[in-house]
Length: 203
Image 1 (cartoon, rainbow, N blue to C red):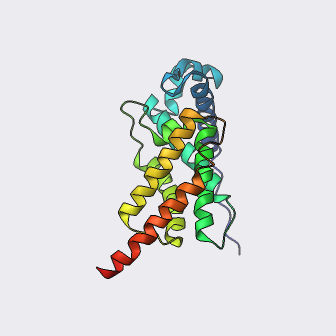
Image 2 (image 1 turned 90 degrees about the vertical axis):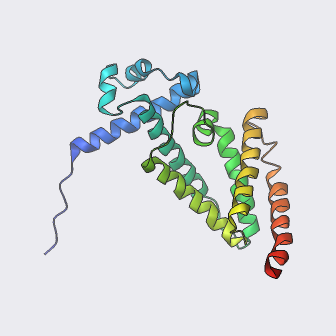
């Protein structure tokens, strides 16, 4: 005998679908007006709700930002997960840095929410930050394959990537000026890691 499938909770499905629509429209407003300037009244109008009805989906504006933070990180995971496989871990790391720089430049407000403290008082919830940690795990896996594992070396890598992405967003949005520097930055970084290794082995 086969076990019957659990009944579909259509009410919950509709609720989740509406939440996703609200988040998508919130991104649209953020790109139009700025991340901090999202108007809940405008948002309610765009999704066919009265403003008080939004609180059935998000109990505060910070909760909306939290959902957007998780959504942005899911987009990031989807993007880096689609990168091609490489036999050479160094090339895989270059691909990662180039794609992260493109990802940031493609959507300034998404970059601000994910990687800068743009919204006063906003801290991602544990649930939303868990999505960000999934992305970090992908990066750590690529770094480990390239021989990088020390906490300080990981911090240096994030600083390099942050510098490239922030410069690209601030000074060449829509271009590739800092994307093209990704390979040089990774090669310099890995050369420094390799120079450290003999010293670490002798200690």
